[in-house]
Length: 47
Image (cartoon, rainbow, N blue to C red; front, side, top):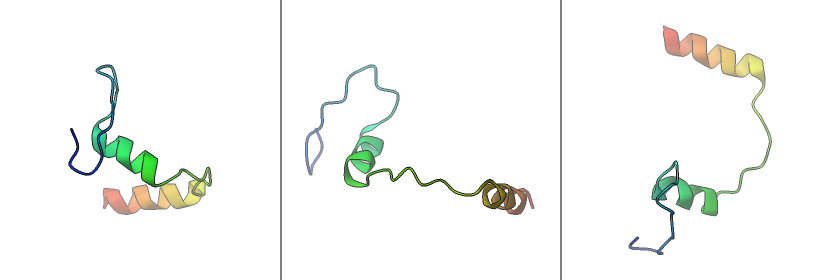
């Protein structure tokens, strides 16, 4: 049981309660990041 709000996660869920709370509280917009930006971040991360 969550301290703030109980949530009913099935035992077959592939993610935890923190992910469920994030999805409930922060709607996904569908706006994606440009591919070049993602590649640039990966290059920075490698160094």
